[in-house]
Length: 149
Image (cartoon, rainbow, N blue to C red; front, side, top):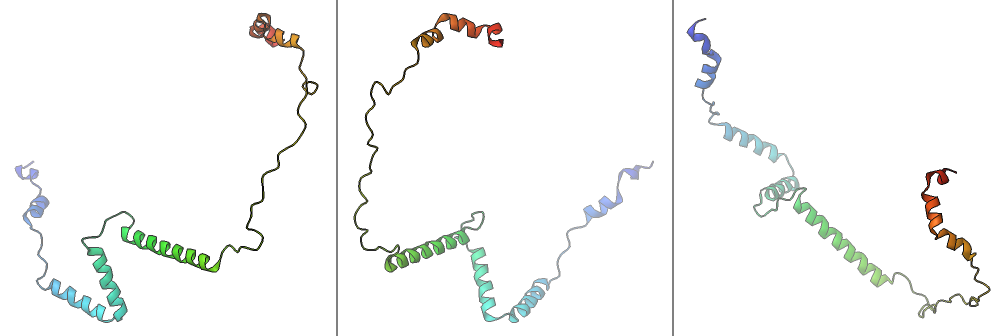
């Protein structure tokens, strides 16, 4: 191996080259073509493109993800439509009110059954309740043999 094998000739050529300079008349040529294309547009389209460029480059624009300006315009549009709808309903008398609906329906009629008496209340045998609350029943419930039976 020679001592020059460490040195890559491609790297030396790439490192030696500086970035190429654009042609001197590049900007002039591009702008001339742009003007030629824009002359073919209608006046309305040229105006709309200018308005769009102003909107995009406006320094006061809030950079909200999703387009803050569009969202604000949409919000104002919906608010305007809602105001118009409320005005139409108010002037048109919606919902229509007919004669005889001025008063209230009245108080609710509640159930008017007879009061409960001692005969109506049935109580289970108290001996069963006493057995369920006893220590014997508690031991039976906790016993595995008894629960399996």
